[in-house]
Length: 274
Image (cartoon, rainbow, N blue to C red; front, top):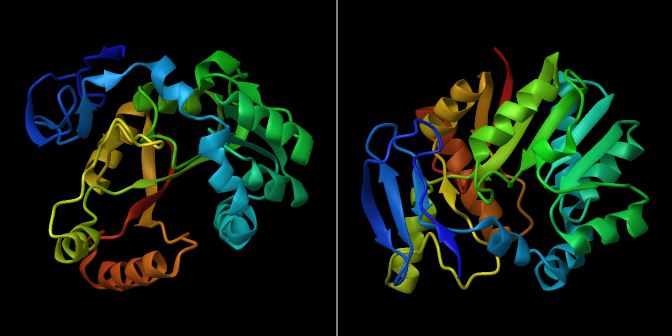
């Protein structure tokens, strides 16, 4: 397997502490300078892209009907800030969010690395996607009203570069929407240790879904600042389809209203260009 060593994606430093040993090769490290948690070394891009095949997407597609209301709620949140014009969903997967946005009169665009997902979205929803990285799509400056990354940044090798590119293609009053797992999901971690009698693993190279970055509110804010964005709103991403996860997130959301500390499974972030 090919892999690559990387410096911190936010500050560029190479001074870290090891949080977890993830096998004979990979480790979970934390930047001593800014606090970003990430896998180092990382599987290379070809290896990561290879995983997003029919087997990977089959479960997501099977649950599309269960996720419809979740994606509708996401769109409603966006429309509180911005009404329908041009929307780009980066790493759009099975395309259900783009389909719903299109039904609500948005002009929709998407990027995706998976051959299977590209073909599925084209034939299922009649939406043509760009296959490849966001920067490779070469969209025009100031083109989009909204760019979204729904549980994508944790999968890609260079989140900062993607956000810098998102800033370039957003209109001056454009908005960025992100959801990503939270490294500070302590309620889940405690429950996992109680019931499983071991710590949850952040990374396993044998998993179909590989996360290589792990954000907190602090590191997400620093990443967005480095990319030229200003955070409008942080919240807990509560768009789950399984009952146990919804209960956990609703409990975490209640704590968040009191303590302003995000213990949920995932972050939800809205940002604008600085």
